[in-house]
Length: 280
Image (tube, rainbow, N blue to C red; front, side, top):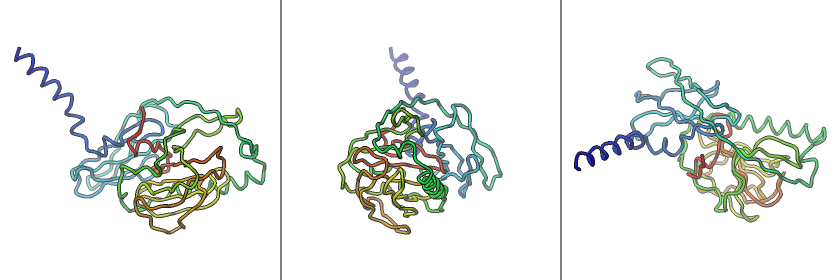
């Protein structure tokens, strides 16, 4: 039945066309869920458009030398439904919409011996609030540099442990959801930059322990926590694969591991997306 075979072949081709028409970056990163990433087509203007999402500038890159795309970080608290992006270009201003899909995140219950890391006293709260302001200022940075790569390298070779987005309960009390991805690794394991960038913040923080922030460009920021040793300083330019410190268990940690945050336009998003390990 050649006619039927032809029809089936045509149907397969038509189904495949939308996927094949997408570029590599879109296929890798477009996971528009709470705590995920939306890739929005901005067209093929001669110069780069500017895009903002909820008042924050957004990463814009050219895909396959053909079209501009916005890579939008979606906050974990975002509800499923239609969301919008504001775009300015040589053609004028416009609003583009995209759909945020629902996603369910599991719970995690953790027992902490140090009660101050669950219910801190006034002095520790003052320190925590000061450090939070410093971290938020780092996340708000938006440098003009283009990220060296968007398919990130894994910062350590350990197995993935606690995933992003878990609802977390410490000693039975609910706290903020898990805003990063954990890697199980031995203390002292070298931590490598997943992409090139500039060190914009380091320090020993109350919850995070020894911490390093790297600006990869245009609001794409990595944070690495619980280090036993910091190997860089603010202002350092770190190449892709450059060692920034070593795995440890400082801060609020029950054992050695690396906690890695990725932030886009000041929203924490699932780092698994950037290493091809995202699970819908």
